[in-house]
Image (tube, rainbow, N blue to C red):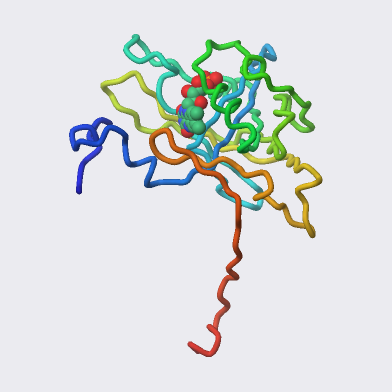
Length: 222
Ligand SMILES: Cc1cc2nc3c(=O)[nH]c(=O)nc-3n(C[C@H](O)[C@H](O)[C@H](O)COP(=O)(O)O)c2cc1C
């Protein structure tokens, strides 16, 4: 089949209730992001348009899209996470795991600015080292980040949406000690959640290894 996404609903015209785009570009890791506004009010929300983009120095990206549950109301409303990152320049990425799936999902509710999602999701906080926003204590891995840049992306003109790409530099990394096996992080032990299309998720439970080729290839080229 072929369809053009157009202003967003092209998949519906093609007879598909859910956009295939998020199923195709996946699985995606989930950046479960804690922030604070300049008054110190804490916020937590998941973002699956999230990834690492550089190792030296380590950097991550996430995209804040849409209009904070205000469809049909006048004027775009940016998400609390983006507003806080713009105000304070700091955020923490908490690893969203299989055990924390319900709390992660609860924290995505479009609560008004200033409402602390840690509280209604029943999550304890742990203090961070290099930044002010707290960490999700039950999460086994955290990346403490400082804002590098916010890049404004195109958005549909007809709707009140905003798309912004946040780039952050990782300045502190926490890994729970029992996850380190022979000097490597055994990530499959904590089963990180992966976002797929529609309402689907996956998780990592096994890994395999492939070493990169050297040049010249093993007797096959010169
Ligand atoms: C698994 C998952 C992934 C999500 N990914 C994104 C995303 O990549 N970008 C986005 O803008 N919203 C995403 N959302 C929706 C936000 O979490 C939601 O809009 C939330 O209310 C934003 O909170 P905030 O206003 O406190 O920042 C996702 C929700 C879930 C459950």
